[in-house]
Image 1 (cartoon, rainbow, N blue to C red):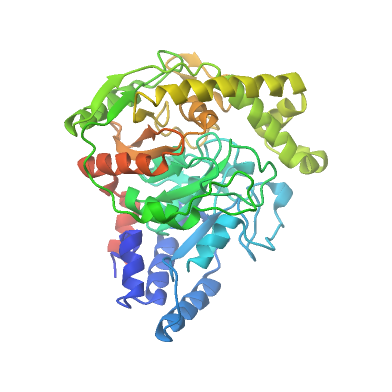
Image 2 (tube, rainbow, N blue to C red; image 1 turned 45 degrees about the vertical axis):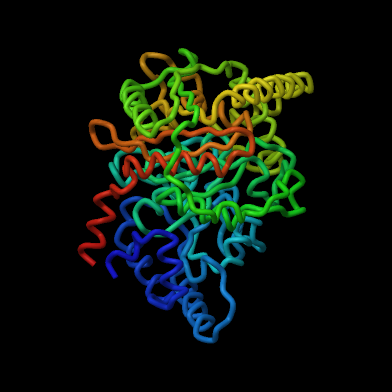
Length: 477
C-alpha cells in the first residue's frame, strides 16, 4: 500500500480495472499523502475529501456491476485553478475571483471525468496564471519539494508538485510562456506543451489564439502520452481543433532513436543569458543523444523576433480576456499583471499586425529548419529554481532582467512557433535542484517529441528520484 502513490498511471489504471486495488484504497492512499505532504508544499487547494471518497465508492460499485468504464476510472486528480471543474472554486489565484465557483467543466476536465477520473480539488497557480512562479494572495506560495525555500515554477506549479510528491498520479496543465514546462523541469516530472489544437480548449476567450495551450503533467513520458490519448482529439467547440483522435498516443514507444537528426542550442547564439549550471548540464545531456546513435549538431536557429511577438500577443490576449475584471478590480491585482495588462491596452493595430507578420516569418523559418532536423534540444529554464520569496530572477550572469517575463525566453520563444515541446527530467544542480531538458519537434510532431523524450528518459532515469519529503511521508504512514 505504501507504494500506491508512486505507481505509474498505467499501472494504477490497470490495478483498478483488474480489481487488484479498489478505487477507495487508491483514493485513501492519495488523501493520506496529501495530509502528510501538502502542508509543507501548498500545492493542492480547495480539497474536498468527502466528495472524493464518495466518488471512489461509486467507481467501485460500477466495477462490481460490470458497467463500462474509462481508462482513468477511479483515479484521483486535482484540476489547475485556472480551469473550471463543476462545483469547485475557480479563483485563478486572484482575489477578484475569490468567491467564484464553477458551474460547468472546461473541455479538458470534461474529458478527464468522462474517462473516469475523480476530481478531488484544485492545484495552486500564480494570479491569472501570469509568471513562472506559483504564488498568490489567496492561497500563498507553492514550494519546491526538493528544497522548500525554492520556487516550484509556474503557472502549473501546484500541479507539478502534487504529481512529483505522489499526492495525485497525473495533472492537467496549461502553457502560454512555459507554464507546463517550467514546473515540470523544477520538480523532476514531465510536462508537455502540445501543438495548438491538439488538446482543444473550451471555453477560451481567444479561441483562435495559438499562444496558450493545455497539456499533461505526469511522472514519466509514457504516462504523459497516456494522458494525451484521452485529452487529445477533435471537438467543434474549438475552431483550431486538430482533426485527429488521441489514439496515436496509446501506441507503445520504441527506445530506438538511432539515426535521428538532433540540433541543439543553449542560448540561441548568445541571444539569451543562461546560468552556468544549466549550460554545463545541457552539454552533458547532449552526449546521451550521441550515445543513442543520433546525429547531433550544435545549431543556433534565429528566433530574434520571437521576443517581440510573444510580448505583443500575450499582452493583447491578457487585455482582451480580462478587461471587465480589470475595470472593476485592478487595485486588487499584482503589479506585474497590471503592467502586462496595461501593455495590452496601449497596443495599436499596427503593433498587432507587425507581430503577426513576424510570427509568419518565424513559422516558415522553422518549417524549413525542421526539414533538416527531427528535434531541437535546449534548456527549459535559463536558471535553476530560485528563492521562493522573490517574484522572478532580476539578473542572469550579470544581465539585468527588465520584467517578470524576461527570464523565461527559453520557453517563450518556443511558444510563439506553435511547435510541440516536452520538458523531461535531465538531472540536478550541484545542490540537488532538478533541471529539465526541452525537446522541440516539427509542426504537429507531438508523438515524435514524446518518443524522443521516452528514449532519453529510459537512458538516464533521472525522473526516478522522488523528493525526500514525499518518500519519507510514505515510509512513516
